[in-house]
Amino acid sequence: MLDRLRLHVYPKEPLTCAKLTQYASLKLETKRRAKPTLHLLHVGRRKEKLRSAEAGAAADPKHKESSAMEVSGLDSDGKEFKNAEEMWREQIGEDGEQQEKKTQWYREGISYWEGVEASVDGVLGGFGNVNEVDIKGSEAFLQMLLSDRFPNARNNQHLVALDCGSGIGRITKNLLIRYFNEVDLLEPVSHFLDAARESLAPENHMAPDMHKATNFFCVPLQDFTPETGRYDVIWVQWCIGHLTDDDFVSFFKRAKVGLKPGGFFVLKENIARSGFVLDKEDRSITRSDFYFKELFSRCGLHIYKSKDQKGLPEELFAVKMYALTAEMPRRVSKSRSKVQANRPGIIR
Ligand code: SAH
Image (tube, rainbow, N blue to C red; front, side, top):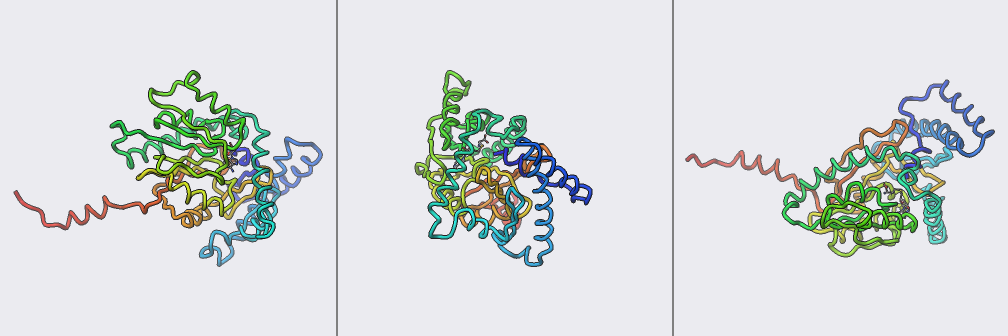
């Protein structure tokens, strides 16, 4: 998934004319060479297009109040879409042809990953070196959430997590298995799931006592319904971009039923600065924070906490972590203390 990041480099600073020329010549240069630098071509073209699309969107007076779905976006060739609907219409078609085109969308997503090596570097698109900083950021976020939501977890509470789009089990192995007694993995690409099964086998892995990877589901998210009330945490990282908006919403609606009372989702994803960016190579989209928020509200999910991932290389997309709950977060502490402060006290 981070592979897409390599393709979708964001300009951190406004592009000057000199820079645009530089990208333009890069484009010609890459045409003469072949594959590996093709990415650079995309990068250059995308930077240019992205910049103007963002500038256009910002200049549009309707931009601020309109729905996230109305904001323009780009594909990996730099082609601009007026809005998400136009992009989805092109990708998965109108109602009539929808099923066939949608099946093709998912098939192409899977076949992209089937061609990727089952390694940390593979699932991180050649950015294996971000594994450590990613896990550290996730661990700090998870610790804060667990102590908030499960303050009694140490008292023999049996915690269970689901790692969605787990790839080779990188997150389970480096993080989840240390905090949860059981972790289930869901991954549609069988050679990734086989690698996960092997590296998480008790003889190959030093999990703490009574902590284990239990189930390995070889299915895509859009076809999965979890067992009712099994999970404390459902972790979804770097895979939700493969789901269409409708499947995103129906997945989270079904998955809510899989949470225990007090349970929550963690969604960790790349964030587009504006609108969306479609990757035609692996059939996925990167959504903006605004876009995600609109989908969360369609799912009936509330943002309990969110945090930016720090320390990633500059040229990658920003990455955000959202903790999502089915129930409205209660702001008890503030209102209670106010009420208590106003209540007459007993003087002893
Ligand atoms: N979350 C893992 C893997 C990221 S790579 C990690 O951070 O290490 C993206 C993963 O999404 C791949 O393993 C890919 O097979 C998976 N994926 C692709 N399409 C999917 C779908 N429709 N449902 C669930 N997972 C999908």
